[in-house]
Length: 340
Image (cartoon, rainbow, N blue to C red; front, top):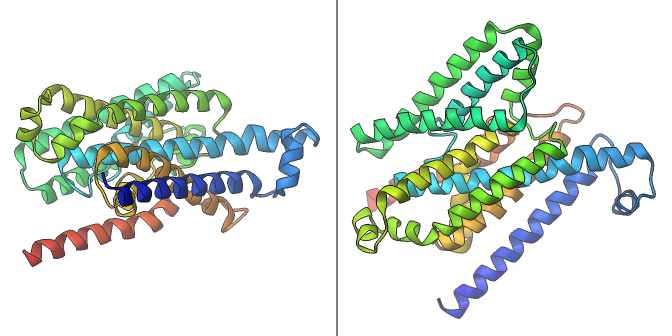
């Protein structure tokens, strides 16, 4: 790697780090009740009212940390799916994987609430992971029959619509009290995250993204073709299973704690590829994690503050910024094909 490229990578990572830190601090300071940096320092050192301490430490800090970690997890999951299917617009939301997770979590929520049971973090993630794997299984079946990648994306969107329709049907016949819980969760939000949830989120996302980073070399070989990767000694069956399980686990964790979050998994990896001027997994995986965190922190800040005290769903804001990126990627890909 030449020196200019190395310097660019260091500068880009420094830029992403500063951006993430900035949005993280702004998420803590701004809201229904805003604080100054000096007030924040007083709160952190215990020189403030109990109410202000609880607002920062029990509400805003866990929410900001969850947004950062889950945004990173979603971006890494999207990059792995794009690599697996060799498709630039593959992602958990587009392929219907998030919708499958949403369906199984909705079923689990209704069943447990009807029996007076409160879902804990492990149950939420388990239900969401099961739904993600079911949707991924359906996508893999379709990919075996369809070689056209555009048709595969359409198939994923149809699976997403089916899962969403079944979810809406379930919600329609649920008890009124259950509907409120489901509706709030299904709109997508990082709110309501407590310290216990945050610990589970941190363990799953950091271990999952760490495992994805460990697969960066086989991923780099796989990007050059399946036969090339096999010749380089990559166990294709094990590698593919690893990608499927990791991408499903990461997207399931996001859906379990934040509901469906759209376009982050598709848009952020492309933004990172453009920023770093490379698609090497060893660089793009950590870049996607940090970039996804910054992206979701920015979107969550806007969701909370633009129309305050009314809060927008996180998916509404991520779609506003993520969908144009996806359109740009599709147009760019189309123009490239037309030029050949």
